[in-house]
Each structure stands twice: as C-alpha cells, then as structure tokens.
Image (tube, rainbow, N blue to C red; front, side, top):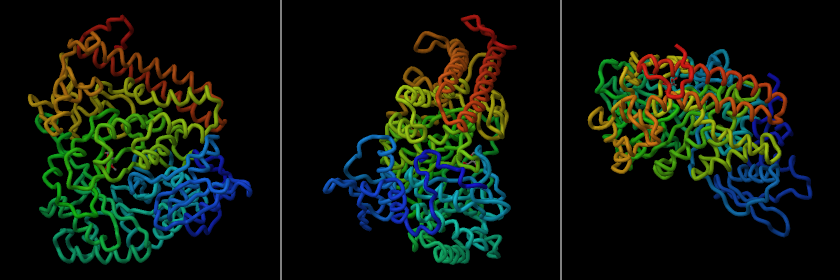
Length: 613
Ligand code: GCV
C-alpha cells in the first residue's frame, strides 16, 4: 500500500505527511498548525489539562490563542484549520463535545474482510493479524480527530476466531495499533466474545461463576497494563446466535454487570448491544413482532445495569432500514445509560454505490428522542482500504457528519454538509449549492426508489442490495410486509401486534391513527387496503407506483446535476461509475416493485405508464 497517495477524505488541504513518533495530541496539534500557518500567523497554544476534550479560541494582542485540554487542543487546531480552508472568520469562544464517547464500531474480521463493508478490506487486519500501513493509520487518525471521533472499536461485534486473541496472545499487536492512534486522541475498544472463558479452560461462561469473574478480571488487568487508555468492551450477546448469559439462565443485566465489574477499576466502559430478537421466527406466526423484542427484553431491566454499562440501541426497532420509527427503548430507560447506534455502512441504504446522506435521518432522530436521552453516539463504520476510504467519495460525508453530530447533536444538516463539501472540494458557490442540495435530498430519493411508506425489508436476502419484495417474506427473521391482493403492511396497533403501545402517550397517539401517522411510516404501523385514499387524494396503490416512478426520475435528475460538477478526476471517475449503478438500480427497483404490486392487486396505473409484467 502506498500511503502517500491516500489523502484524508476531507482534509485535503493538509498535505504535510504526518511524521512517525508524535507523542501526544498536543504534539500533533503543534505539527498540524505549524505545517499549515505561516510562522507570523501561527496561533499561540495553551495546554490546560483540566479542559479535557474541550477548547477555547481567543484573540490576544492581535494573535489567535488556542487553549485546550489533552485532546481538546487537537480538536481546536482542526477547528482553526477548517475556518482557514473555508475562508470563514474564526469563531471565538469555547467548544466542548456533547457526548463524551463518539465511537466508530468497525465490523472488521482478522482475515481482512469487513462484515457489511463496501469500501474494501480492513485497514488494520490481514491474514489473522493486526497488520497495517502506519502512514495510512496516521492519516486515519487525522481524519477521525478532524471529525471529533474519539473511540475506535476495531473488530466485528460478531467475534470470529482469532479475534479473541486480540485480548490474549495478540495483545501486543492490539497495543501497537493503540499507540499509533494515541497521538490523535483516538482510544481503542474491542468487541469480546461472551463465551471466551469456555475456550480458555474455565469450563463455563456463566456470569455468576466466580472462576469466570476471576478470569475476566485477570484479563482486564493485562489489557490495561498493555493499553493504559483502553476504552472498554463492546458485546453482542444472545443475538443472532452469538453466545450470552441466557444460556446459563442469566439476564442481560447479570451478563453485562459481570464484565463491567472486571473493567471498572480501570475506568473501562462496557457497551452492551440491545440488538436482540428471535431470529428463528415462524413467518406464519403473525402475533410475534420482531420490532417489539428489544423493549420487551430490556425495559424490565431498567435500573439494573452497573454505572459503567452503556446499553447501545439501534435507532429503529429493526435494523437500519431505509425508514423506521425511533426505537421505543430510547424513550423508556431513564435509569440506564444509553448509546444511540447508527450505521454509516450503507447495508440497506445503497451500499456506498447509491447515495444516501444520513444527516436528515439523524436530525429527525435527535429531534424525536431528545439529545439528552442518550449519553453516547456510536456508528457502524463505512471505512475500508479503498483509496477514497469510504467506497463512494460522497459517503465520506456520513463519517464526517457522524463526528459533527456526536460533538453537537443540534447540528444543522445543511451547515455540516456545506462544511464537508467546502473542505473536500472547494467548489464555486453555485456548484456547492448543487452538491449540498442533492446530497440532502438523496435519502428521500432513495426511499422513494426502494421501500417507501415505511415498508422496509424488500431487499435481496443476505446481500441486502437490490429489490426482492418477497425476499424476506417467508424467512425466520421477523421481516414481513404481508402483501396480498387487497392490502399491504403490518398492523402494529392494538388490533394487531400492539407494538405501538411501547411508545410514550404522545407518539403512541400519533402513530396509532392512520390519519395522523406520518406517511413515510404508514405501512410500518398499519395494514391498509390498496384503495385507501391518502391525504393528497391519491390511493395507496397509486402512491406506491408514483413514488417508484418519481424516485427513478429524481435519480436521473440528480445524476445530471452531480455529474456536471468539476470534481477532481479520481473522484469523478468513482462518482460516474457509481451513479451508473445507482441509475440501473433505481430502474430495477421501480420495475420490480411496481410489477409486484400490479400483479397482486390487478390495479392499473392511473397515469397509464408502463408497468412491466
Ligand atoms: C454484525 C444485521 C447485519 C449483520 C450484523 C447485525 C448486527 O443483522 O446484517 O451483519 O452483524 O445486524 O448489528 O449485529
């Protein structure tokens, strides 16, 4: 790998290669500022330990002064560089991140593959070992710190052998990677396998067994000796066939607390994922509703988790579909520390071939849930070894914006998109407007093209790309649209699965009545006849057809606009290739989905357009 050719995705103005041996974020801040500012404009740096992650920018005696704590000083340095690159005036004052933990969760396997990875292989694993190009890892550190991301969970939550060894025989390799990222204020976290003591001769992984507890305590001691600023563990337990405490008749709280106590003496955090449901469901069973599972399991455990446990909840009750309501669990655990989990890897949202900027989605989530309901923000990474880091050059926006929203969950999607566009491309104002406005519309376009009105799951099983309206209909994953010749959607009100009762009163009332339910969630909450009339007078079937026709046309329009921009040649080639795929994809979605509903309902398109048969 030739690191020299990998420029950071959005900090292209930082052309000075980062040297080896930077000792701390303070030293990195000094290096970045020195390389960027002429000597006579170099800001004065005041290191103030007690400021931690935060920084302050002032003007003193005609010179800029940056004060900041251990990591804050580096965040402040990037803030200064951003304003200079963008040609905007420096914002004087203080800044501190809203969420102390801004965690990028990487589903990287040690053979180098990445689960749900769409940007090439792992940046740090290969052939069963931690292997990386140090210069590229420094560039990565620069990007992460520039976005304000401070924890990297480096291995897949599905812990496949030999990833267990990262906390055992390969701990020195883990420590070396941690050392590379330390000067950027990025701390390592690892996903661990709950059953690990079993394979280490303890004979059980029962969380109430003293030998198990002792085994994890000893393991924790060794980890923190090797990596003193280690952030903690992430655990996927009793989920999709992963081991967990249920095998021993123990609750998730008992399982999580056991691990949390082993790492508490070192200030470690235990991120316990709430993505738990019955993945062996019988599709004939219409009463079991996967959407209800996490709430049913975790709500009774509210208040029973130790203080260093963080329950990580996916933003919707399913699995990062193109549209879901917010997870009711986020609104129901006042005595539990929560993390909100989003997915930058576009598993169901275009796989970094199709454009889907996530900022409007996150704006909606924070506005609905309230930023103070959660204490950490985590995202499944979209990074990989591809030269542009994120597969589609525009997908870097999601990574950058994740950091921005973790720093300030009140962020305005347009402002963040504009900042990213300006740092990345430095276009003329009208061109920048074109890029920003289409990126902000990309989610709603993708939604129209694929599964609109809250349907979800109409994708090809396993790959999760491309249309397949009945792909998940007769499977065990709890993922059904129940379309027949008369109606489509799942009744989740009290006449159906009553999922809606998991919401606080105000949201429950909003969702349970099809007249007040937001249209984009209608078929998530309701089963409706094709001839039912929507707010604008169109029938449901017509709306299903129209959205798919409109989605394709808007994709064409977006392609024309974006391909007219003067992007750097290497990005342009990537954007052209992927835009071609996105157009083919949108056409396929339109024709397959419309044909599906046409065959079932027998209803013609009111506007007489061709539906393929
Ligand atoms: C890491 C979905 C994905 C899986 C992923 C899982 C999870 O089911 O398809 O690849 O596994 O979510 O979030 O744990």
